[in-house]
Amino acid sequence: MPDGAGASHGTLSVSRIDLPDFALEVYFSKWEFAASHHLTASDAETMTVEELLGLGGNGDETGTRELLELPLSYVETWGTDALRQAIASTYEGIAAEDVLAFAGAGEALFWGMQVLLESGDHAIVTVPNYQSVESVPIATGVTVDGLPLWSGSGSDLEWVFDLDRLRALLRPTTRLIAVNFPNNPTGFLPEHSTWLEFLDLCDDRGIRVFSDEVYRGLEPDRERTLPQAADRSDRALSVNVMSKAYGLPGLRVGWVASRDRDLLKKLEKAKHYTSICNAAPAEFLAAHALRHAAAILERNRRIVRDNALVVEAFMSENSGLFDYRPPDGGCVAFPRYSGADGVESFCRRAVEEAGVFLLPASIYASELAEVPSDRFRIGIGRESVPACLDQLGQHLANRRSS
Image (cartoon, rainbow, N blue to C red):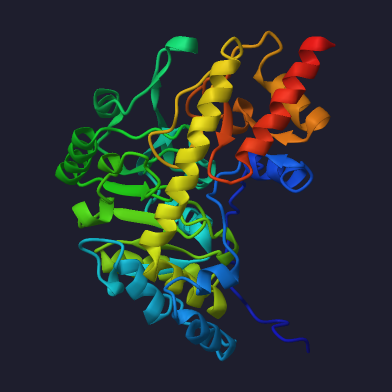
């Protein structure tokens, strides 16, 4: 008799999360490695393994030997002690025990927007955003509202974090507010006073803050760097990753920091169903990088500062087509395109005719708010930016002469 034949077994009904296509990742799959000039990169300039291990002067040989002798075994689901200690050192009030490692920030966002919310809860997320922050909770049946990060339109548009608009969205069932500062794709940062008022508001109402801080550390004006949410609130979660400000996306190492250790335990159990643990070499290299975080971030800020001047000059030379505001932080910006052909056609022709890859506004379309449709994302964190702009400038010149 086959196993279980004739036996009475209960039937477990499991609802499937029906997620839409991830517009940004689908578009990147098509063009990221096909385009010859990547001008919409969201990460800072990367490093080789040799360059990374060389940080710290005479530590190169020691670090290389340790990496070569590293066992390729499983590591702790929470992350190695060395990694968690290195991560904790980037905060003011976070201990290693307050850190849970993930396979990039994407895994942390995916599970965070499920584990932190239950049926009947209400969440608010900033718009524009990284799509999973809104798509995942919507797919699980949670009620979600979007908080637009702008006022006005066209050339009069201003990026804002409007707390009065936020208060109008609050409900008795609001359990979570997800924010991303410096913002992707706008590069926008609120003022310190607004940020602290927001965190106090959430604490007073018992609302959990889910703070995506992956671009923190690239602010051209260091005074604009915001306190990390997990340092300010016992209930808040700070998400970060090696990919963006540190420019090391190939490591695929991210994390959540929070002083709510019971919540971290819930997230750890969810992680068992996906990555289980990170790769040992990736965690070794991430810990090494974080021990030299100041040097890496200073290097990347320099690249961003230099590129910002080049981008501003290019936009000024083509002021009839572009309205540009440099990012307050991070290495991406969301300029306006005012050409008669529209931003979607502009971006499509740039990549198809000149190999210059940009992200049009449609990639940031949201179910929660109508994102300004005359914008495109440009990245300013890589050393190739001047060459990419030269190619884009030649493309525009060719169009004018044709």
